[in-house]
Amino acid sequence: MTETVRDNQPETDTETGEAHGTPPWPGTAVPSALLPLPRSWSLRPGPPFRLDADSEIDAGPGTEDTARWLSATVGAATGLPLPVRDGSAPGVRLRLDARTERSLGPEGYLLESGPAGVTLTGGGPAGLFWAAQTLRQLLGPAAYRRAPVRRDAVWTVPPVVIEDAPRFRWRGLMLDVARHFLPKDGVLRYLDLMAAHKMNTLHLHLTDDQGWRVQIRRYPRLTEVGGWRPRSRVGLTSSPLWDERPHGGYYTQDDVREIVAYAADRHITVVPEIDMPAHSQAAIAAHPELGVGDVVDTAAVEVWTEWGLSPNVLAPSDTVLRFYEHVLEEILELFPGPYVHIGGDECPMGQWRASPSVQARRTALGLPDEVALQHWLNRHFAEWLAERGRRPAAWDEIMDRRSPASGAGAQAAAWADTGAAFGAVSGAVRADVRPDARPSAESDLPPATTVLSWRGTAGGVAAVRAGHTAVMCPEEHLYLDHRQAAEGEPVPIGYVRTLADVYRFEPVPAGLTEEEAGRVAGAQGNAWSEALETPQRLDYQVFPRLAALAEVTWSDLPAPAERDVAEFEARMAGHRARLDALGVDHRRPGGPLPWQRRPGVPGRPMA
Image (cartoon, rainbow, N blue to C red):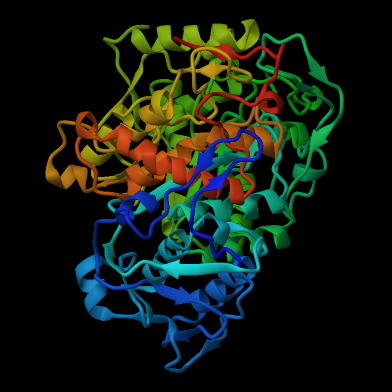
């Protein structure tokens, strides 16, 4: 007698022997199967719905894209045909509904299942797509595979009503593709992983000292020269180890169009970042006229092979303004989303202070110091973007003003500590970065400016009090390249931040008014890639902590001290089975597996 296999039962990890997965039906509460946690749910009496070869997808007006995604993705995993039709056969019914939009918003949805089928109702196309993601979770881990693993599998959906909507509108991940290039297929894969977690914003850090990763037709040398470096340090700056292979790559404009379209199909906005005026050595190597040529021989500058922070920065000249306007013109053509990120972080002031031409420019502009000069440059591009209907985004330094009374206080000490960890050269440069500047709630930036707060939350607080939007990504909480345990981590970097630590992060700082809190758009995890040289290293650092951030930004959780970490980790046991099915080389609860270790490669741990 053949035993019936139910494919939404726990799986066993063949590498570790761990049992993964909690069956969503029968006998357990539905939330044990779902992540992020939905707003509300209730189990109905009666048997589950069985998805089988006779099941169809009934696509109402405006639902065709989600119908095609369901048919292709779930159909591949189950081996079921799942045809998209306008009919009454048992199956999955897709609808958009204005009442759902009014009550739950465009990203909200209602999922109703019973023995006759499943109905997904979205407040908008995005909400319907997130409902489809929930349905996929209810089908079990094997629904995340690309082909069926058991031909005798039985696919069921528990009889349930789920009402759901996100807490925040920015649920993001930043991929640093400049330090270590992530080829196009890797970006597409991460878009699928984000969609599986209901995350909707991919921030691509496209340019830095170590590489320029997007084709600009007007300036081909940006990728011909700036897209490649001769070698890379293995580990952080104190490491004596080198990879002598040239490293590089870039996205052609058609690659970008493909990425943006693939993201849009998954209701994900792609935010491009062109960093300036610091983190620009790759651009200066390609175009020496962009650098501070009266204090450094910019013709001798090469794409940087070190990590940390280069002293070479853009000159605040008309040449630079016109050059980057031309770059941004092409960026606007490639990225139709509302946000364009202009960097603005970690600008060393040494070359500007030493340059007669820069000082003459500062004096002519009537600016008191170099901090004001950088603000002038970043504000120029913020206004340029706003005039073209885009929302400028920048790191929180865009809110900085010099504080005469602050001297070289806490921030300077923090920079010195960080710089020392990076190495002597970078340490000296970092000590020259804004030692006496602080975020200010007084702003002359375009109102639509979005500030990404990475140096703690102070920059975000200043931004929302000035009337801007803030996205929280503080280094000490949401830098995903940072280590996940005190000992035994591969290339240990930064602070220890565990899965539980990320789950306890609260994006809205204490002390904000209700109006100010409403300007906190959400949060994002930042995956800086100095030590993430392979997709496997990226997976290990990002997952499973991105799953915790997904719930933090989607679900209406209690205060951090009241969050039930044990309950979340119990659901994570089932979610790890999904990650396994997706081929994610995530960190296991017991630490790195043998192939995930990097013995002998030094990192940069911080207390």
